Image (cartoon, rainbow, N blue to C red):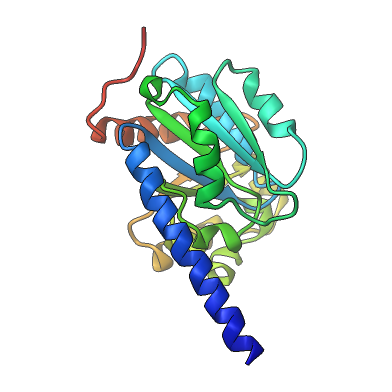
Length: 225
């Protein structure tokens, strides 16, 4: 009996989240929204820093930082002069749509082209919760091993883009990057795959160009004065 109650509670939570995500999507209909996912240490924040350095002259970008505790990531992002809001889950392993809805009024959405939501570091829970985004993108460090896509297929199946980070360390690991890409494509043949090094900046330009190409598909011109 307890198992049945637990399943019903989770079902209710997901239904409530889906309703709020739909409302978020309506609120954000003029803004391109990327839900950035990945493990702790995969390089999400460093990728975001590199992305902002490339894009802030070409588009108006806002950032929501999701973390369990602290404002360390938001403090890093604030150096790029973009509007940023930190959400601390206080122990929760993912953001949900209601958390995002609560902070949207803190942005001037009419002046944004893009909103990046850096989710809590986790390859499991965030994959299952729609925040009202246009796309999910997952960052995977090659130092995590080439078995991660087959072990955590949902997050790769749900992501429109996969950023393979820390390629500069490939020579110091046993990871098979070709196998990694093959497994990702077997799970999600439509995924865009980017090989980057956030430390050196290699490959980040292609990722940024792809983000901008998605922005143009929204039908809005970048808000550059």
